[in-house]
Amino acid sequence: MKSHPSMSFITLLVIFSLLCVNFVVGILLSVSYTRKVNQLTADVNIAVNDGMYEGEINLLVPEGLKVFVMEYQLGIIDEKDDMIQVFSQSVNSEVRRLKVSFPVRKHMQNWKISGFVNVKVKYWWIEKFMTLRF
Image (cartoon, rainbow, N blue to C red; front, top):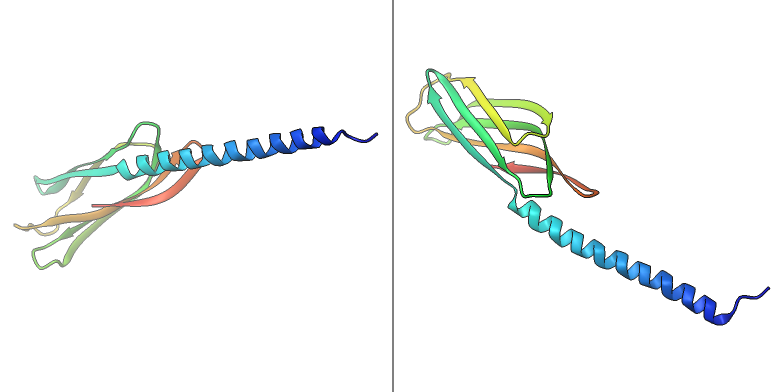
């Protein structure tokens, strides 16, 4: 039995329409994902208290994103831009606030904190590993 020519056209039209819808949804999701990922930031507050560096790293996560912290590293830098001390820890969990506490080896007047947080970002089915530097 032969299929009717208009039936083949309708089938092709349906397939083409589904491809177009899939393409448009992919573009809209990609634009939304990019906008949300660009809003993801880390706020770091660390101070010297009784011979310890203490504070927290707060991840400011836009609504709809799932962020899993893999690890973080903090470096203490002196006034000559020399790395004095490095502290790092693996976390691997979905947290937005990390408490930080580690001993001071050398007290400095003009110290700076530099570092990064490695995260896995998930939005719908899109998943990406990225680094937030501070």
